Image (cartoon, rainbow over all chains, first blue to last red; front, side):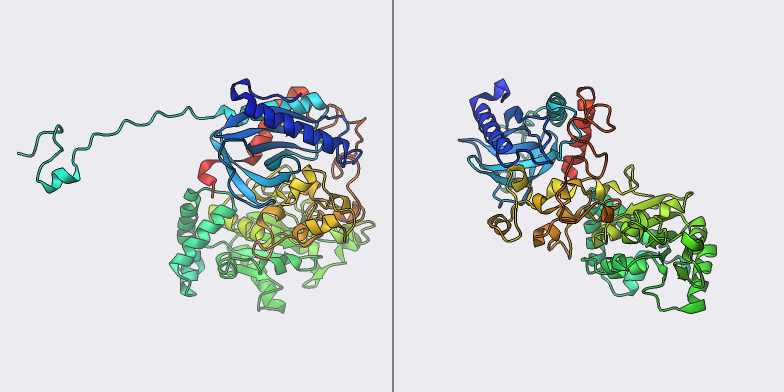
Length: 176
Length: 360
């Protein structure tokens, strides 16, 4: 069920698929039959995309619903921090405190817990719908990239000042 | 300005504390309260201009761990700040006065600052036998508590005792120890649970109320949202191990050495709302899970009656509605079904997002 934002391309899809495969193995392995795992839910990844050079998306499992950040090949590395440390990731118009993790078989995966345990969810569909709505809320107020402000023409440059002129050649008329 | 109406700033300056330390205290406190940079200035201004707020600190059935925690707050200024700022007029544990003199202070504060003082309550009143299990100044504590609450501006319930009842209210509760909100009905009560609460949380709450003259935003259970909106589990440094299914199975196994998740050893972090995993203890040095022991859930209601500290959390929603997966359905209060997913998501996102001005 792994999916990634089509616009984000194969890098996000690859991260999404790997994470989903690994968490599915955890669900069938150490988390199997633990009372803290909600038997009505399933592992799925939701809305993975590339944002600011990182893969961002939500992982839904029977025991947690996390917003996750991961580096992608060729992209910038995540801020240097040891496992268990808290790092702040800017996203949309907000910032999120994520706990640094190291997922065996994948590597560095920073996670922000949205829900855990998952007892609040009636079923897998509502968990997935919540994940989608959460991503929507996170990216909703994403500010439109502001165009670079046009460079203000300098009324005074150092050379002009030293040589007693008001502006560089081609600029404003010199002082009377 | 008369001595009665001294501001907090005047007091600390008189004690030789520099303005630099004062502004540092304001910004640190504003940050710990999750407020933006503007709040530090606002706080400084309030502390410089407003008369300090008298606080009456009463002790019922308790162990004094809240006081112990409070006076060990990490910031060096806190002992001066809080103890002078709040003009702690009465605290039978740390004040010099005793006997009739002490009792006179209570009455004096009550009359002089009617409707203006804060009543901080550590411990709770036992109601059995007409309150005879806790006699304070020759009278049942419950009477004194009700009397002092009558003219208070607000009431702070310190710790698990005042908030929920704690060990003295554990089954079979022979003295009928009762949380203070069951006795004080007509005043706003801020619950600051924990056994004890974290020092910085206590000073943060007092500073907020005295500085801004209003109550912090409270959750449905009456706890300040700024410190009790997240579970220990949400920001636990061992959380990646939980997510990856890596658990400590025995106290001395390989997982314990590697710092894996303590859920299987009975950690109550997943159901406990408190700031231990973020603010931590002893000046941010550590907290129980970092010391290798699971959370015992001491800030949750009735934590003494929830089984052993080492019992694994079983069934989902242990502290709320017990239900197994078959029974979980949209009919159970608080359950997210598809129709309310958007609302649940937005609420959760609001809880985790930090607006850029708050990013430290």
